[in-house]
Amino acid sequence: MSELCRERLATQLAEAVAEALQHDLNHQERALLVVSGGSTPVPFFRALAARELPWERVEVTLADERWVAMEHADSNARLVGHHLLQGPAAAATFVSLTTHDPTPEQGVAEVARRLASLAWPASAVVLGMGGDGHTASLFPDSPELPLALTTAEPAVAIRAPGQLPRLTLSGDRLHRARRHFLHITGGDKRDTLVRALAGDDPRELPIRAFLSCPLAIYWAP
Image (cartoon, rainbow, N blue to C red):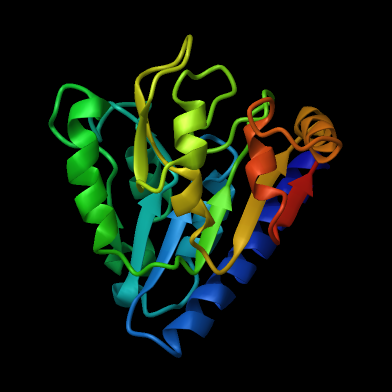
């Protein structure tokens, strides 16, 4: 039953995001979609990819990325390529968050230049959330979290215990969207969200940084 619920959730989210993109494309030449990685969004990606949109006018980028090659199994870009940029959606323009530099600290300036050329504010930012309350690569135990939550720069290199080096959009840049969605599944994620709603310190649970603005929550068991 939970698998069926999650498929329905993915379809409903895809409908909402497609509607948002089409609405904005009715009034502007390009529209930007920011998505997250992980296993949860895969059915959403597939459902959205099947939607009939003027995909050649849609830009897609990521909320965050591990500092690995695009063909690496842990690459969010690889995930997006395999599951979202298929069928009609293959015509979209994808903008990656990695470079050929050895570290995210060395590559962040180039990524910032790419991000500057996109159609901000984004039509939609689709966030995920970990059991520790992180979203994008805003990890509660990352030394760079305070910077990522406060800087006006578009992207920040992130180091966190037990994690590959990463690059994340900053809190400021993630807020630059007309619509925010949170896509989560499972009882553990629900419990984390309940805890987040009961407090206001994003350094403890970074998802809180997005609970003070309109956020459409898509959850299924």
